[in-house]
Length: 391
Ligand SMILES: [Mg+2]
Image (cartoon, rainbow, N blue to C red; front, side, top):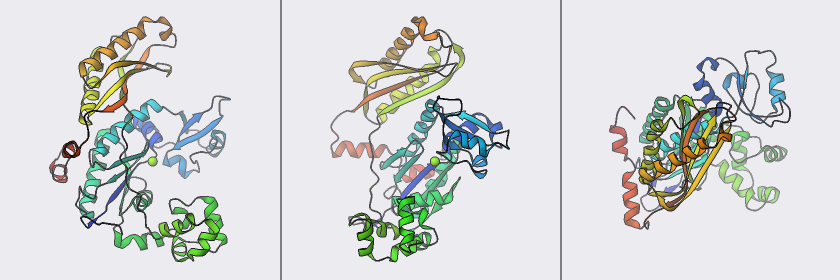
């Protein structure tokens, strides 16, 4: 187990993984799809079926559809299931929901690392003062909040490091919450096949099998020198360490690169008739900028036509801002310009509209005092556990 020397506090990491994210979002939009195989595809456009499967729901997975396989193959697999649905990826929608969820997650702990559109790590050690029970309670509330806000299920793993947390999240999928305290790391790993160990690819697994390593347990006991000879002097011993559940990789907080929100308009628009609908978005973006002590240099709008064509327009500001006045004036101006140009409406009316800021700069020096302040803005455990309703 990994111990923080200064405080001797147990390190606790949470891995959050949104379940079959793209396909689940499609089910949420169209609940009638829930019982049917849903396959979200990246169509390459060359022929009607060329491209690959991005995500499938569990109904499709049980029938043999996997991420990454060609669409043609998925169609073959589901040939006996005419109720199957094949949908194109809708990145603007997935990005928007992901961002809202990441916002919830990052409010839990200042140590937050987004790994992909649907995965993040949180180091909650200091939030829960090294207590796994308290971390578990936070995870339960987090799952409930994500369901309440987005109707979406996720899987959460809790462990003494990122490796174990991630494996615990995988273990509990879907809609899981699986906790591996330090004393259970050994048995948790030993019960699983080598293929479940994060960081071991199929090639490595094959090579290990040839060496007689069949399980994670075998690997954890294997001769270090032989591993070094076979896999290199860094990688070989690394494999043995992860097989023992050792991982010191820190949860790294990365600065956000852009903040955006998009909505579906009440009515499809062919002029800037939806100014009022945009106001909550402007307010939200300004709030999020100031909460993170950020100012934006680039202001952009996104519009999506009824034929699902996406168009972006942006302006660079002279002075970075977090002011709702400037955000709304600039965005309104971009929308007005957009509708002035008739060419922009050739592909149908506007169905969805959004606003996005980038070129983010943190203002003020982040000295220790500032750091203290921004950490104080993060909900403390007590706040978190005492709030009902939203949490
Ligand atoms: Mg996922």
